[in-house]
Length: 120
Ligand code: FES
Image (cartoon, rainbow, N blue to C red; front, side, top):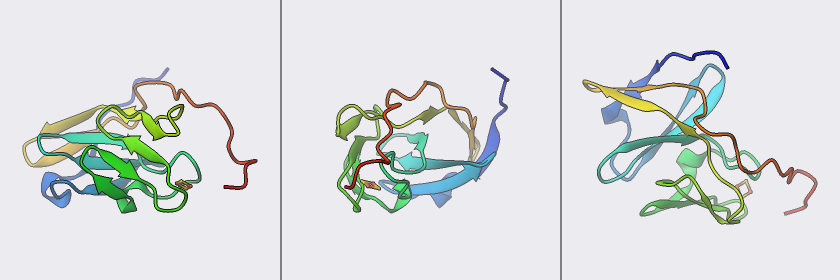
């Protein structure tokens, strides 16, 4: 696998606490979540049908997609509803006031299950 370098994503001030911001790095949509004590980089879109996660409803450490109700724990990246899905994780570094992300997922998706055939 090629070694992907960190890319500038945005300023830390661009992601409000308890908020989220999507960035596109190397053609990969990534959501930066700001929790009470850190920034986390996850898949930028809902694994069900691609809704931007920055627009989803936050409830503490979880986020719910408004289209069909899929829910994720943003701290672990694991799906809550359904539990078999997960969000990709991306290495994130803070350099001064800047957020840098390595646009290469740390772990292989656990859900290779194709849901596109379902009528949700
Ligand atoms: S697109 Fe997110 S639950 Fe369907």
